[in-house]
Amino acid sequence: MKDKLKGLGMGLDLLLKASEGGGRQNPDPVRQNFEQAREWFNQALGKDEDGNYLEAYYFYRRVADLSPSNDVEERRLLSQALNNIAIILYENGQNKAALAQLEKALAVDSDNQVARDNLAMLIQEV
Image (cartoon, rainbow, N blue to C red):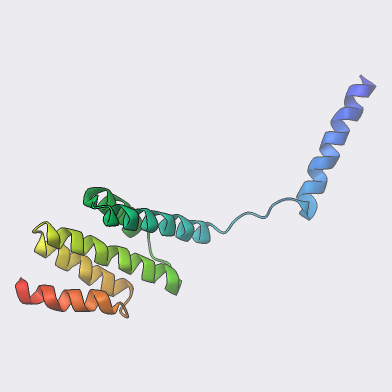
């Protein structure tokens, strides 16, 4: 029995040493969200370039469904995804829905000049 306890203690020592600072830090969940969003955005771009607009829409939508943080880079990515959703909707005859997405894109990032230009063009058509 004593030998078993000694082996157990060695495992516990390793665990305690790992938790004293030698272990991995918990990743920042906001940063993880952003990295996931960037991955989805890149997948959407690839699908868009291949002409798979429905699949591209799906991945852009996943990005757009995330709540924006105060991070400028994250807000830009979200705004770009909303702009690209608007383009897909516009190309499929959904002008009012596209308009709503462009308004959201500008609400998230008012500096998105592409979304601003697309909105101005679309307002003339609606």
